[in-house]
Amino acid sequence: MRTIKFVAACVLSVFVAYNFSFATQEAIPDPFAQLKSQSPAQMGSAPTLNQAPSSPIIIPEPPVFEAQSWVLMDYYSGRIITEKNAQERIWPASLTKMMTAYVIGMELKAGRLHMDDDVVITEDAWSKRYGDSSKMFIEVGKTIKVGDLVKGIIIQSGNDACVAMAIHLAGTQEGFVSVMNTYAQKLGLKNTHFANVHGLFDEQNYSTAYDMALLGRAVIRDLPQEYPIYSQKEFTFNGIKQSNRNRLLWDTSMAVDGIKTGHLSQVGYNLVASATENNSRLIATVIGAQSEKKRADFCKALLSYGFRYFEQYTPYRGSVELLERNVRMGAKGTVKLGLRDDLTLLIPRGRQEKLKISYRLTQSTFVAPIKKGTPLGVIDVKLDNLVLTSAPLVALEDIGEGSFFDKAWDRLVMFFISDNNTDNKEDK
Image (cartoon, rainbow, N blue to C red; front, side, top):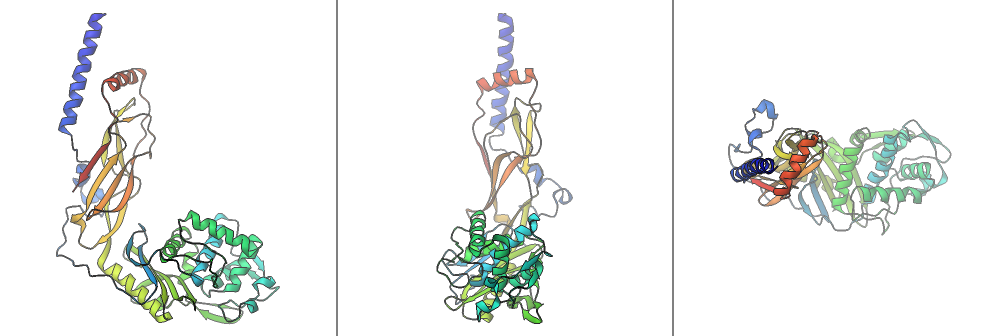
């Protein structure tokens, strides 16, 4: 019996010594070495971290306007490129209709509402109730298709159409507004509160330039079937043709495809606009411009600045192994880690070589079972010590439990060796 214990102790001491030797040799492992060595075909079209620009690019100061507030946002990451008073409370005016249309769109997406459903117009939705404000010119007692009312809201900015759809879906305007505020919370619009469905002035119908950009981002992301309506230049209903008030839809110098205008005498002219270029999409919000032309010009200047001096960059692809770490108690001794999706971010042009990428793991060695997709750490991408984006490192494979003898041996090893230290690494 003493001989068996002596042999086990010797084997364990050799194993421990090997592990400590391995830790010494890989004190700061390079998790990206394998990825960097891959050919472009293996990695995709992403450039390497060491790729230098052909010539330095100087990024000028962003444009400044005579407006209350503005925001330029990268659609894919939500990162703010430039802003002024982005969190200042504003009255969104008809930008409110983005949320009205969003709620309707989510009902369509869920299949609880259909574009060809009939809506009977009640007296509350009668166009005569809205005087000189924007309207679709619907009449009491008429039956109108949901699809026409949606276009009336988005293209014609019809206050009457908003009320008609609110009553159709919720029974009352107040009930519909409560749903709007619920969605505002879910979408992270922290400084937004809706008091009506159309945006006519109300002290309690408020938001911020930043929240309106976030809402525009949600409309584009969550409603791909309805979003193309925002690019339509005109809509005719009841023999009356009305044009979309977003002037940038007629601008052939950039690919603007939405999204919504607003105006109140207490505020000025508002616009949330979105455009694409190559593989990028930007969202610009301007609040409180002095005219329709100026709000369009200001948004165009913001979008032009973003497209000219910033670019989408994908340093790592999803489902590609970036790390391999030890596993205890498992059928396999290691687990492969990577990203669920491509890591894409917006950066100033020509700054790829200045990026710093680091990772943080919850522990240096993991314990089975591990399910594929389980978050085991985080990758951070920094530029000039500012974190541009973070993404979870996940298990790329299932690791089942090991056999009785495998687990017994690992329990013995874990008794003598602590694997609970976190694993951190910065790659320049």
